[in-house]
Length: 384
Ligand code: 1QQ
Image 1 (cartoon, rainbow, N blue to C red):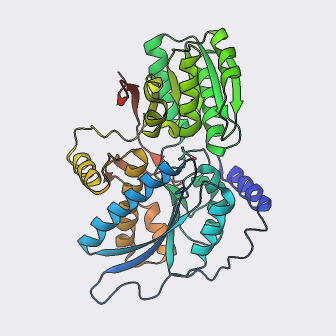
Image 2 (tube, rainbow, N blue to C red; image 1 turned 60 degrees about the horizontal axis):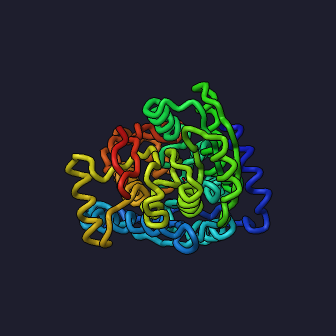
Image 3 (tube, helix red, strand yellow; image 1 turned 90 degrees about the vertical axis):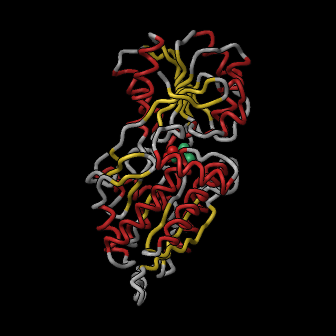
C-alpha cells in the first residue's frame, strides 16, 4: 500500500474514534539526560499487548518474549530498559486509551505493540502524529508501516507469508479447487482473505466458495457442510486462533479431511491445544521454527523454557527480537530520544536475531523469507 492509502486509513481510524483520541498533546519530547554518568542509556518503553480476553495467549507469549529480552539486555549493561506494560484486551478502544496513557508520559521513548492489526490501525496514526516510534511485533495486515514514518514492524505481512504456504501446498496436493473462509470483522483476517483470493486467482485455481464469520462465533456447521459438498482440494482460512481452531475441529467432525492453509493467526500452539488432532493438516508460513539448527535459536528456546515452562512460539520470538532491535537502535542513537531512535530504527540492517537476518525496507516493513510448517501428529513440523 502506498503512503496515500495509509493516510486514508489513518483518517478513517481517527475519525471513527475521535472522542477517545482527544488530545494526547504533542509535549512528547523524550527524557533529558537519558544517558547516565556511567554511559548507560536508560530507556522507558511502553508495551500494549492483548493480555486478557479470548486471544490472551498471543499477549502472554509476546510479553514473555519482551521480558526475557529485557532481562538479558539489562544484564549486559549498555542499555537499561524499563517496560510499562498495558493490556488492550484485543480491543481498539482499549488499545487507544492505553496508547494515550503511555504517550502522555514524556519518558516513554517508543511503543511496542499493539498485538492486532485492528488495534494498530488506530494506535499507529496517533503515535505517528505524536512523533513516538511504534513497533508492531505481530501485526501482519498490509499497510501498517505505511501509516507513517514512526511506524515499524518486525512481523512478516500476510501478503508475503500466505503465497509461500499456498504455493507449496498446491504443488504437493496438485490442488485445483479451494474454498476460502475468513473473519470479516478484523483488519488482519480481511487482509489474509485479500491475499488468499489474489493468490488463488494468480495461480488459476478455482475458488468454489467464499464464506465469512465473526469473532466469537461458535457454530460453523452450516458453512462447513456447504463447503464439504463443493469438494475443495484445500481450505484457505483467515482467522485468529480461537475461531480458527474451532473451525478446524468442526470441519473434521463434518467429514472434511483436506488440508487447511492459515495465516498468521494460526501460528500459535493454542490451535493444537484447542483443536487437538483436528488441527493436523494445518499449513502455515512463519518466520519462526523452534527446531532450527542454530545456536542462537537453541539458546533462546532453552532460556525461555526455563523461565516460562513452555516453548516459545512465533509471537514470543518476534517480541524477543524486537526488543533487541530497539536496544541496538538505542545504542546507535546514543540516547533515548524519540526522533533519534526513529532514525536509528530506520537504519537497522542485517540484524541477526532468533528469526534470522532482519532488515527494515525503506517503508519500515520486513524483508525476510518464511518457513512453511504443517501440523502433523499434534506438532508443527517443516512442510516438505
Ligand atoms: C494481526 C495478526 C494477529 C494474528 C496477531 C495476533 O497477525 O492482527 O495482524
